[in-house]
Length: 281
Image (cartoon, rainbow, N blue to C red; front, side, top):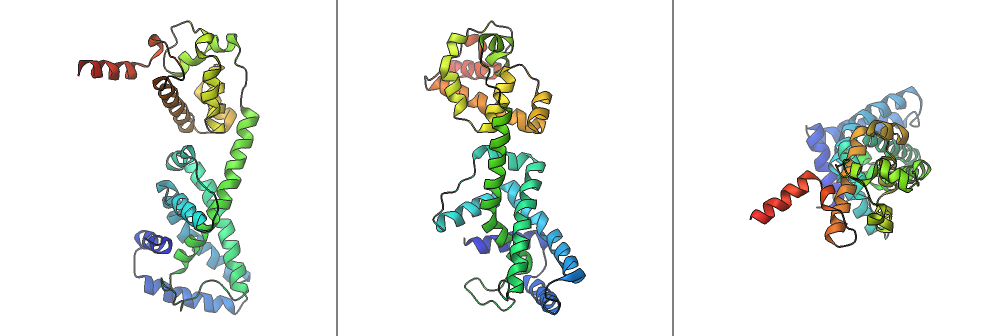
């Protein structure tokens, strides 16, 4: 399905009603605003109303991963190497705060471009007769947001990398590991940890993770509680738990691949139960 067609269907599903009626209404609004050069109080009210229409559509597309997917598709057509990290897609599903941040950023860029185009006599037209025909203003703004998402995401991701590096704890001394250690991370704290078991392999696996995940894990190994980690890294508790869970999965995957050895007594009860069930089968 064409990107524009998918956006139009998404908008129709959220707003309901006839697209033709929305296009007729939008044409009248643009005609009236052209007389005041898209400025003043009239334009401010119009812009606020349009933003309110667009917001729920964008938030839904961010949560479903539709906006990142379409943005990556557009970037590929333009010859840009752009992808959204899997951890960030998970955050978009679970974190309203992250969705709000990206939505505001991308919508601000889109509305700025939209107004500039209108003043220059370009942009949206009610009589557009291209391959996909005309679309209502809401669909048009969401389309611009899709093109703008790459820039907004890169800004946001760069900032996440910056604060993750600032807040990351790099103390992997024996005392630090024995105080909380990988045992606490993977669900058992009753056993003495031999740091030689993990060596550099553990750090190599950690270095493969997203910077924010590295920061969460390093603080965990230092003995900080989830609430403290969330506060230090400006994350919600769900994001902290999700990143720890993802790293736990990476550790067990590395063990299955022979890259790291985890003592049997440190395996989580869930994994032991699974292996027991496999053995019985």
